[in-house]
Amino acid sequence: MRYVNCLVGIEAHRTCRFVERIWVVRDKSGIARYESSVAPNCVEVDDVSDLPDTLVSEPGECAVVLDGTLNACEDVHSLLRELHPKLPRGSRLVCVVFNSYLKPLYSLQRILGLRKAEMPRTFLTFTDLQDLARAAGFEVVRVRPSGYVPWRLFGLGDLINALLPAIPVLRWSAYASVCTLRPILAADAKPLLSVIIPVRNEKGTIPELFGGLSELVKSGMSLEAICVEGNSSDGSFDALAAEKAKYEGQFRIVLERQPGKGKADAVQVGLALSQGELLTIFDADLSVAIASIERLYSVYVSGTADFINGSRLVYPPDPGAMRFLNTIGNLFFSKSLSIILGARLSDSLCGSKLFSRRDYLRMRKWQETFGKLDPFGDFDLLFAAADLGLGILNVPVRYRRRTYGVTNIHRFREGLKLLAMGLAGIVRISMGTSRPSWLSRARGDA
Picture (cartoon, rainbow, N blue to C red):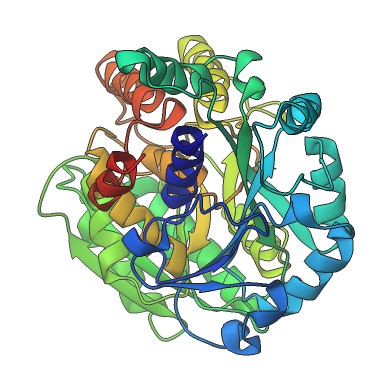
């Protein structure tokens, strides 16, 4: 079982990547799945009550690992309620939970004398955990089964344990699952929102764009506009400069010429120039109404979600807004990525997304380990958000037909790049083969 416990521990480590502070509540049975000795900034405690109350006020990312704690508890609801006020927004509760359907095997191990550790008292189905989490003010945002074959078998066990998490239905036969919970907490105040606007040959929509942003400011939103102009041939930069002169007394406006090429580069430049606590990406073609920004913003501020993804496929789009092949491609990527990432995506290619700067810094580090395959700069944000357990909520927005210019998207060329990202996601996310280098020692000790 040491080998399987190591696999489960590695999965818990993956969930806690790029987190500044990690607290581990030890398993009552004495089994150590989470190797704190190889994890930076990790502190072990014996009980939930030993966690400091100052967690909620300390700066930086925070994760609390419950290593089998829920299965040793006879009142999970009370335990989660005790934890909730100690956790700040952006923190994550990472729970190692044993497979409830394997309960007879635990009893058989005890009868045969193969198990000396204390028997788990409580076995939770995923429905049980979701309901208990919701009742205590949490949301289950990520579930990763781990540990199928308890032996290496000259590498065959390693292969099976890597493949099964990527296979529907069979993936739920694992020894345990690493479940990530997000505390549902509303923002204390209305944070500053940075609107990142990549612009290339969109001169005709720029006056309406700034007029809409001005209306949002008048309604009480605190925002700044970061415009990155990508070598347009229609005078877009001059149009942006004129609107900046007109509105910069109302809100902060940054205008930058893009040094590289492509939307991905423009998005990265804009994010680097931003100052807001919250970040959103907005397409200058106005195919999504500017008022949608307030909708995504209010969802975050209310505490409903930490990563909001716009979805254009719920309401009927304007005639001619999305070409048939684009619709088919979007549906294909949405369904396939939902399976690969273990997240429900209704529109994987919508440019409208909103998330916190705190989470973006973690996603940026994640992107550096995954590789730069995304031609748009917001597609890989979905990958990072799902893999890091941020939780993704799809919020419907209306998709409108262009009133100026033509699309800058090359469907087939860039579609192939997205397909390559999907294949890489199967190997590195679904199969869990992408691990921080400092975990190799934990794997070697198994």
